[in-house]
Image (tube, rainbow, N blue to C red; front, top):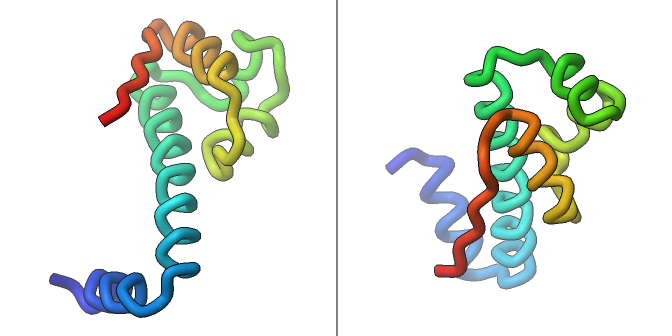
Length: 91
């Protein structure tokens, strides 16, 4: 296990606020990463995806880098513009 992973694990054990903030931030980060990977796999630039969604490149960048409070409808439209289908799971 890396030093960073050890630090995060230990800090989460002793600091509940850190743990909550870290987990929420990580989930938002993962959404942005998944969207960026899907866009890149589709061979699209942020600008091209923005045109498909009738929005600005800065909006795509914001979603990919700070996917906090993103609407489900936005995720669905983005998936559709990438030729994909949105699937949500509760585990």
